[in-house]
Image 1 (cartoon, helix red, strand yellow):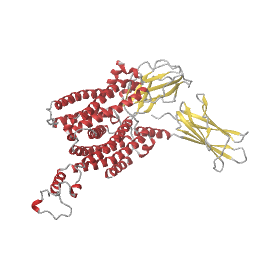
Image 2: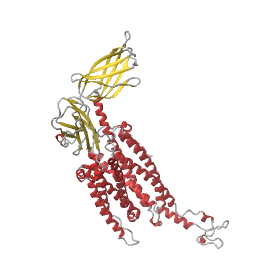
Image 3: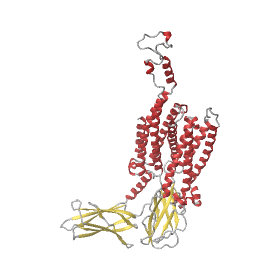
Image 4: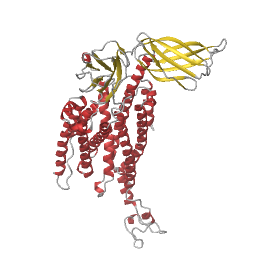
Length: 625
């Protein structure tokens, strides 16, 4: 209960005072702007993102109205800025609407994509077709996500089993379950890393699964941040394979019946160094590498991964050893169970502490917990972690009982009680003191009532069974936490959504509200219509209209139409196509192609045969940069 209260208090303190920042990259501006109409053709198309991005030769495409590519050369960073992408356009471009399709990789290794349009001269129908699927909603994206689950699982098994051997029970390295667990962990991590490296190129460029064996694409993937981290992980795994093989030979070389060699301080130091290095390959290429406080976020992410491996991998190791069937002298010593209990408690404490910091860094506010996919997933993870802590409290109780049962003081008391038992005959007078250790001829040993009340040989088996059940439940819940964690690492953090919402809020500050009076068709009855354009700038806008009576009440009209015209350039009239929303009229997809003074024409039909048209002007602004 103390742990649960601490977790709740720290979460409240941390999330209560958090603000908005960034993590995943997002498009913050473009030149030309989305939906703009240019009088002359531009020489470049430049995109600006919220953080540094990388891209391939085909990351940025500009398509003509005839669906022909008009950027002959690949994208480059504009003026050396890592958060930009720029392409040069070919010489003479015909009038019409052009489509810009882009797909880049943010600093945390996740691809993002999008598209927008601009026009030269006048807008036109465009034949350009751009994929609108999510970057992860492809065969490669789904396979990549599954392999990331496998990689995290392999890391947990490898780190957890090795730590259990090096810290809790050194001779466990000679047992078959632990050896198999180490092998499974190493194979899972190695195989998934190789597959992730092969798929890295198609994952970034939206290629097919078969393109994973394209050597040119593989070469480009290796030079990226994520590809370099995967290569470093493979080198570390090769070193670990050599050390595991050497350690297995040391156990195999021990004489039959002899105590297996125990790891020394040097073995523990090397193991810790390799575990940290493996965790760094994740932190270097995922969420910790982007956003705010990167210098602090990287070591925190490493600690979080290692604590996860020590706790979950160690739990699975302990579970396999507890379920092993063999001679009694091969059981897990109570001292090893107690040692792991202490180590697991510290690991969970580190998990909670580092997890709270990461939550603050990636979520940012209470609202984001319910309004973003990342926040909702995090809430589920916190709930499962609280359940794990509750189950773990029962595991610690069984551990304490088992350790107490196996303690030297307990054994001494049991032996003393056994020596103090005296055979007695029911109803006979007490035996003389000198006959304490003799057996009465008419009362054979073992027939007395005290002998029938003798306690069982040991309660250790009962305690082990209870501990085994609790560890099983805890391990299953730990796997659920691991799966949710993997999902979180592939989900856009809430801070990125917060930054986009903040940018949208800034843009919405230019919302235009027009109040236009009109004659309602009866004597001395003047109504008003209120038109709201949001965000009131170039691109897609929401249009809402409300009709009021002379006394300020809502008026119901049979029909309401709003059109906008740019008279200087002869654009329009553009019909907003309002729909009756039972109290007001609205449309959500009116696209205005260029800034300037626009004429708003409002036609209100007040009866079946009466209608009136009024007009007003509004200034539409450019997309903010």
